[in-house]
Amino acid sequence: MHAIVDHIQSVDFNAGEETRRYLDTLTKPPGSLGALEELAIQLSAITGELKPSVTPPAVVVFAADHGVAAEGVSAFPQAVTAQMVANFANGGAAINVFARQIDAQVEIVDVGVASPLTLPEVTSARVRHGTANMVVEDAMQLDQAIAAIDVGIAAVNRAKRAGAKCLIVGEMGIANTTASSAMLAVLTGESVASVVGAGTGINPQQQAHKVAVIERAIAARSANAQAPLEVLGKFGGLEIAAMTGAYLAAAAQRLPTIVDGFIATVAALTACRISPAVRGYLIFGHRSQEPGHDVALKALEAKPLLDMGMRLGEGSGAALAYPLLQAATAMVAEMATFTDAGVSDKASS
Ligand SMILES: Cc1cc2ncn([C@H]3O[C@H](COP(=O)(O)O)[C@@H](O)[C@H]3O)c2cc1C
Ligand SMILES: O=C(O)c1cccnc1
Image 1 (cartoon, rainbow, N blue to C red):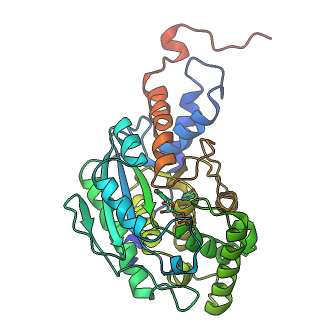
Image 2: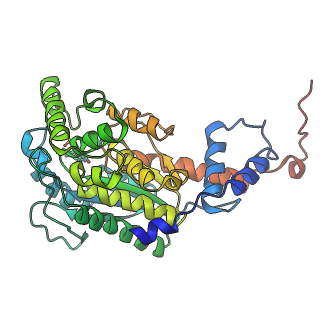
Image 3: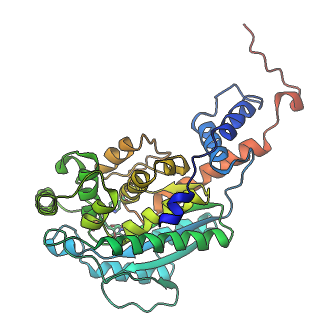
């Protein structure tokens, strides 16, 4: 991890400004393509190129289990994590469908599922068989969090070597909205009640219980909010750590990265707390319905591209946003300039 962190440089703001000036020479009123123009500017700052490509994209989904599931914080049992990994391997999950739609290669990585799994389609990189219950003890040890971060780094390096020009990171792990909510409350100092949501669909009574479970864990663990790795180790998940590593590696590789929903954004916040320069490489795909997502987005000063009322994870919202990145790059590469098209660039007064 440390070698990668040392490698991360700020995005190239000069390349971004060059694209901003070029966009004003294209045959449209200046700024009229709104957020698409900002996206083009960011993609240039990330890659250092005026006309970058984001094709092909790669999807990496990290799966792991959570000891805190034993507290009854999810609407679904822990066994669903492994069952969904098999579903990913068979190509039947939402992320498989959306990945096919955008011609993305998909890698599924088992970084810590609790039960045995032997699926040839799944990369086996298990750091431990699920985390411990954060109410009782630290979810994992610091060296395990770092090992899981390294799993994420390795996966991104593989995607990059395979030719990926854009990264989409997803997760699967029953009870991971509890882990993410605990991390976010500690990292931001916001109240637990303000970041907790229904996750897979618990009722208001179960949600009050989820808040109480997290409050008990936070009181018992006494983490230093200024130490992101410690917060990750005490409350996080192995897949959240791997996602954190993936964002660090993507920044080191100058790979445009689309952040998915709530869990992904908490991992992104963790990566940015480890290395603030990561922020410039991140594009936020959508606004999740999970209430903590707004808190996490605000902490990152991020504005998501889509608002679809989704609350799934897996990288689904990021995959849906990907065509907007393609549109931004096509706009820069293919639109005619005022000079080329013989169109007057003077607004009449
Ligand atoms: C069938 C199914 C597919 C999923 N795909 C993603 N999640 C999402 O739901 C889980 C988080 O919610 P909670 O904290 O309430 O358990 C994660 O696995 C997340 O990826 C799923 C959940 C289920 C049940
Ligand atoms: O936004 C997400 O990532 C999310 C929300 C609820 C359940 N799983 C994931």
